[in-house]
Amino acid sequence: MPCDIIIPVFNQKQYTQSCLESIKRHTHTDYRIIIVDDNSSDAETVKFLDAVKNDNIKVIRNEQNLGWVKSVNRGLAESSAEYVCIMNNDTLVADGWFSEMIAVAEKEPDIGLVNPVWEKPDRISIEDYARGLKKYAGQFIETDWARGFCFLVKRKVIDKIGGLDEAYSPGYSDDWDFSVRAIRAGFRCIRSKAAYVYHYRNKTHKGAFEQSLWDNLIKKNNELFYQRWGKPLRIVFIFSGKTCDKKKIEDMLFSLARQQHHIYIWAINKYMPHIAHTNVEVSFIPRFLFYLFVLASLINNFYRNIDKRYNALFMGDSYFLNLFSVFGITRKTHIFLTDFNDATVCERIQKHIGEVKASKKKEI
Image (tube, rainbow, N blue to C red; front, side, top):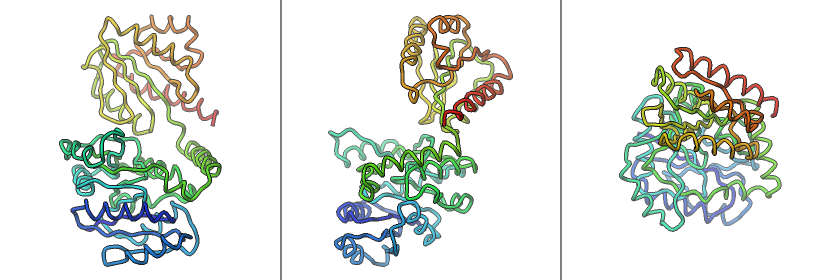
């Protein structure tokens, strides 16, 4: 199966060399590497890239520094492979990473983008941690968006939505936007539970920008993303009783998570709605502690800064609503009394969320 790995490079010979060595050592499926040299100014990097060219590594050089987004797109223009992996040069791959990502991508036709696992405890080596993940071979969890340090994308996704949007040049939030476009086109983003790639974090971008420019770039591109897609909400669902249609509610929660919203489910027992998605946090609390947990959580929410505060809360207990009004919590969170046994509950929830999104858009 033809697979291409696209790696933009700007200077940083040491990171690039380590990345390539790890790919060669730990990749057990056929692949070709396309390095896009973004007009490196470091002679040592240029010399190294000239030396690594071979039948398996293609190096193309930008005549001027174009940044991450345009360099990736130039690499995509050079590729016609069925699978493309876009990755930073400040990464180290673990054994079997690529074949595992492809294996989970092939499990279901609507899987479009695949991330590996990238976080680990400091005290554990990359090799040992990756070895411990092998027990999850073939398993994955749906995620909100594919982080751009390393993600696999199917050719049919690129054919349908194109490459990275150059409005985000030179980089940042482009991967988020690309993922949302893919999700809107009917694909899913997932995280392979058994593939591991270590990321040094932001060495690629910070090697090309001063800190002040980097901070301004993050702010500008986040604002662009929010203008296009809206700011993700933090939504709480309190399930203290039965629901009319558990499957229908779970489908609605999946839909909200795929819209980038962060979902918090507080429930008395495991028969309540539950979905596996990285944007969904589920807490099952014993009945005798349930009301105390909810009250303490929402009082704490009242004092959080605006970016960490719950934006909407759906509950089926009017007692809570009256209590929250006394504490003044309703002034900072949209709270909706919701009959989860009503056949139209999902439609009403979506309507209320639309109202909250409209109010948030005025803040952007």
